[in-house]
Length: 109
Length: 238
Image (cartoon, rainbow over all chains, first blue to last red; front, side, top):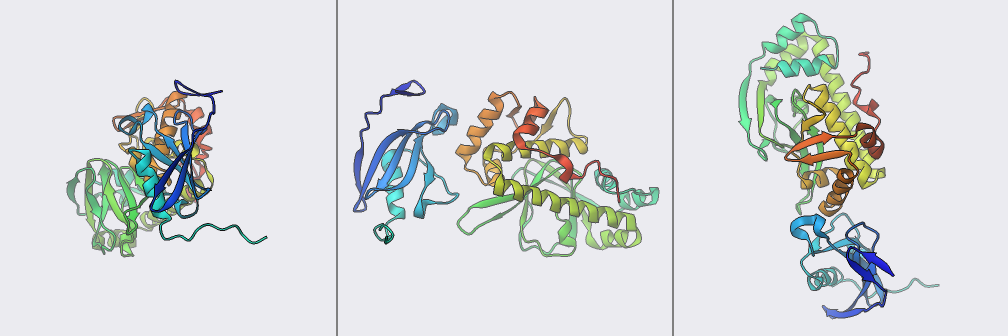
């Protein structure tokens, strides 16, 4: 059991599958150790972790409830860390960045 | 006019009464700028120096897609475009607050610098200190945490404002928005906001209404891993 603000998480993880730009995106709820902005999602593209999103708390005033790109991997790695009004918008933006990227492959052993 | 410039240069080297008079006799035209107005723009080849008489300004460059990096903040008494004496501007200087700016023709400034080697040396030293500040920013950007970067910047601004005689009761003007801080320190606005809340919550600062109030200097110094040596504020003139 863990606590994020008023919410208690029992870690019955409910993953959501979203199809965006013909990619199979999966969102997995997690807690992120960022202080108040602790409710997060691991974002997977075809099973590969590509981003960590967190929902912004009341300390961000007019951006409360927005989803912030806490960390991006691969094509999303860099200093540009935007916020989105909804998870759908965030997921679409993330998928868009991998639009032209070939499917991920594991390095040869 | 230019009393503040004399004070600034005198902090960088001993000036004689004749040096003071020469600076104070420079021809000056004064202009006011609103917050957000550009004082000088990348690509300009100025024929005058811009001396900040009041208010604050910042140096910055923007990438083609709009990402901006702020490289320095200026306090009153400083020349915002000293490199313009010898170089084409490779970045822009913008008013952070409403500013009063004294314009001094390069021809007149060059004549004073030629005739008054102590003034030249003081200007040279101030330029070296600006480079030292840039190195410290690079150190922070490359190696310090977000918390240390923000605390460090507050320490720096506070000490420079104090040196300019503009701190009262541990308060000084610093009308930077969270976007300015983020662009200066290579952080997202969200991350900057988190750290500001943290520093406030720990009782180190208050930062609102364009004013920085340092509530716990030693705590802020520790948070910023701040060592003021690079500002060379108290160093003997060599």
